[in-house]
Image (cartoon, rainbow, N blue to C red; front, side, top):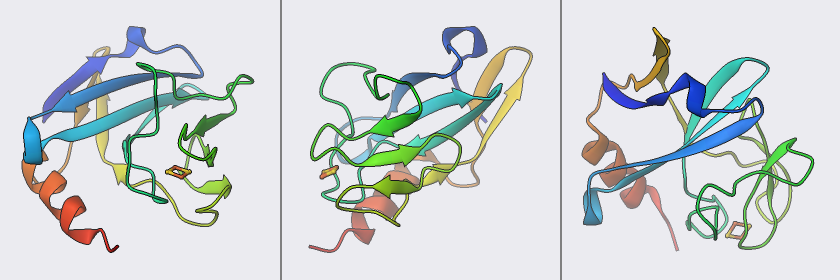
Length: 126
Ligand code: FES
């Protein structure tokens, strides 16, 4: 397991952004807490495969009920990552498996972050 952030860093609802690795192996992760539970997604909009945010850790709509892509305004459900409105409606952010233990949140994936990043990159179709 790989440490991502401390639970106390997250408001509810609230987000944290963690980037593991560098360059082509970079895995950009958005962690969102809602209803007392954290969720993690690859920070990559299914519309044009860009990170959701323009400004650091600005992922939420003003009412804090959705993640929003600053590219073209797609809205994503906090607890599922499903796009409910926007150009990629019906698509979803890629969920990452995490574990919360002793006030810490860890990435809990079978694959290493660089392998996850590589697979994500290869899955893009233009
Ligand atoms: S790139 Fe995210 S909505 Fe277009």
